[in-house]
Length: 175
Length: 50
Image 1 (cartoon, rainbow over the protein chains, first blue to last red):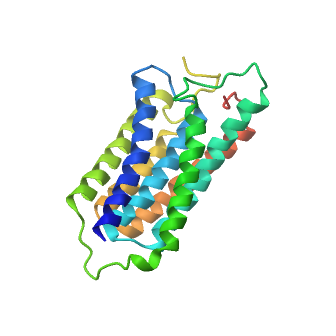
Image 2 (cartoon, rainbow over the protein chains, first blue to last red):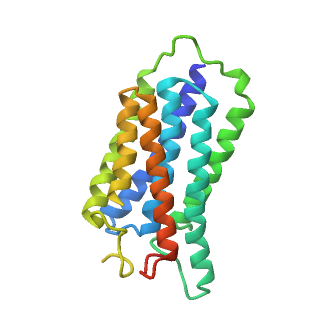
């Protein structure tokens, strides 16, 4: 059971690492995120939320349902951005700096597909993780959820200073 | 945009307070708002897709 709990927290950390990478691009490389990039971050936060529910309340199929819904929504956002750059033809080299040859929105599609597949696998073997009558939260799980909350808070502040309450960057990429 | 992130933040705050019902409510609101914002982006005359 503990192995599953640790693997759930590691999945949260993987998605958190992508969000931290996006924050590094924003503050370290001064590449402001586009509106669609912000929407993809929301999809990832939804995935983290579903996994965090597992950490706090124990494993439940409903929590994986939240992960799958968030991942599908996020994949639609990422997919649209990928297709926008494919449709623009050969002149379009994509938005932002690529990481290991792929743009952040392409990594977004991959992480959302991985989230859906991971949730499906967990649900497939759901008989192997019956929740204990008294759910115990490991310290590691608690710290991972705290880290996730901190990342969401950073995103709230960063987005407020970039977009205030509006839809963001109305005149093309933010300068 | 920042308000939608704020709603996600509230859902995490409720999660830490172990209030599952409110966490679900704020998460649902945030998710629906982000879907709404996506539709606004796809249909708006502003240059929001890049």
